[in-house]
Length: 208
Image (cartoon, rainbow, N blue to C red; front, side, top):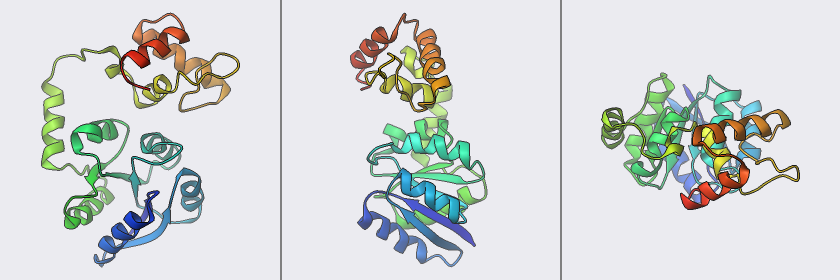
């Protein structure tokens, strides 16, 4: 039996996903969560082989939650689900550690297949995502510096306009030892001198 947890802030969509998966005899939805805080409590108490995680949630977005879950529960396979088309987020999700990306508006049977595939530790790729992934290997080096950033570094860049009283950026990880290390690494990669320049860069590139 594949134990599944659903994390989506829309109750109606959670119900639709639950109903779709309940038709499969080898899949059991063990719990639901509406956000990151609730998800943390659920994962502490609930067996989970596959986490269905929405990208667009209030507070911490799905990509931030993905990074946190992969660090705390590396054994859990994360399948990102979204209403956004694949070309907007699929590759970023895979690079951040997701095992697959499924569109909530797609074929319900495809969602069931995706859960089964990622539960075995394999990547679930639609033909569209597989083609984008293949194209990404044949493309030349990134034309813009921030495309070389990791997901956590990108989160730091996107949050750099929200500065703490001590002047450090509040990135994905607000631990004191990381407030300095992460922005400094981002500054080096982007060849910028300080947090003010980092903020300007983020605004000019429509990242905040």
